[in-house]
Length: 52
Image 1 (tube, rainbow, N blue to C red):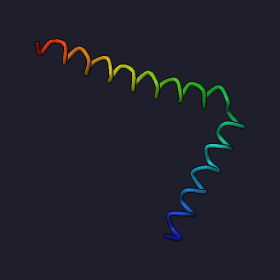
Image 2: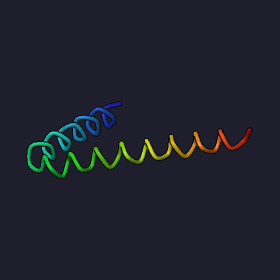
Image 3: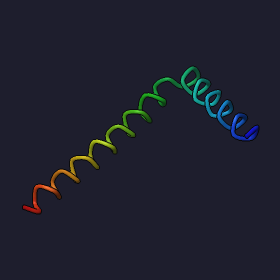
């Protein structure tokens, strides 16, 4: 359980540092992640629509 806490806090610290040190790169990473999720959802919707 202690290892999980350390990894969680380390991850949060890394994200905070990344946001402060390279905000433009962090924004690009978030935008890329959202684009990937939306593209996957769109592909799934197209698949379901083509089933009928």
